[in-house]
Length: 351
Image (cartoon, rainbow, N blue to C red; front, top):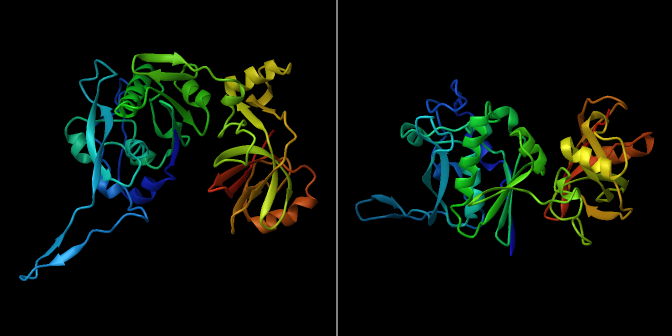
């Protein structure tokens, strides 16, 4: 059974204004001296379906609050003296029972250790600076895929030999606390290659016994949510392609594959094109099928108002539609689909 658990920057919104530092020491391991985020119960919001705590007043006018129903999840952070970069400790956090535990655990992980955990020796490249970078977790038949926003610039030294070992140990220990998870793959904005190349390795999947090269088709290595969603409607996710036509409340979309890095080189070689391709990207568009996708009200488009320039600007969807007929070369776009409707559009600049 598959479940997709999005966490759209929930922690980030709740920890803005907090002061934290994710300092690194000379051996590439993070320091445990930084100010840390609050506990899990203050990081996670109450879902619309959960019940608020009830209060009652006794005869003596004393007010008591019943605690919310919670569940326990674990988040793993680096501990030890630094001689073994893989050493981590799992710390328990309480989260609301209505939350998916896998998603909640990773949402808390990217926000870093609490001050109490730091006092016990916990350290991490994750901190309040990286809070909200967990995007979603997709679990299907024992395999878990965890996707993050691009946090590479926020995790200084995590790509060093020691740093990557520590980072992966934190991620894997957090993932494998769930007994149903037998293997896990990590992605940055839909790309295993981007995550793995950052850590100076090929796309890998991790089991409880160790790492294995991921057996992925080239199309599965496309950025975003990929480019092979099946024959149905466009699922929730982030998709690259071309808008054939757009009106007030829907657009017709030609899904394509956008590759970068090693995936771009491999895809171009398979298609008999120059490899590695110029400018480190490659587009494959094998299907002419157009999908009609509803557009949510008041969508804002990040568009490229001047041909040949990378400068972007925000424009309302209706104005963007009105400008389309006057443009000589409308660029490809990234659609974010949530709940079956387009909630954001971003034009892709190409040199």
